[in-house]
Length: 109
Image (cartoon, rainbow, N blue to C red):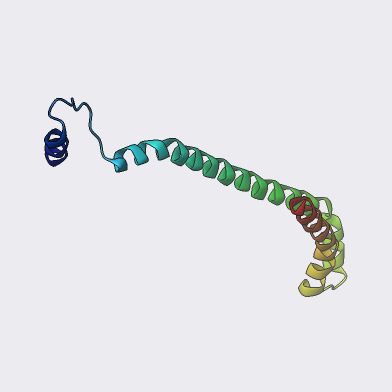
């Protein structure tokens, strides 16, 4: 900062210089609040995503536990794993597609 002081004093020797800072300093200070806000927003978004995933897992686990007897009977009657998976997930895919469609409709405005 010595060079800047000399440059100012060469033009006006009576000009007092107090707390001289660079533009980078002021820019970083002005961006500090924005950066903090973005970090907090990212953390909140991460928590929302985590809660959504845990909630979805809970719904699917509950649905499977409600159909446990049906799954056991189908296995006992000789249904293969692939057809059983298709039968059980077929009903769920309809709900998932409906939820995705509603979400995209809501996001698109």
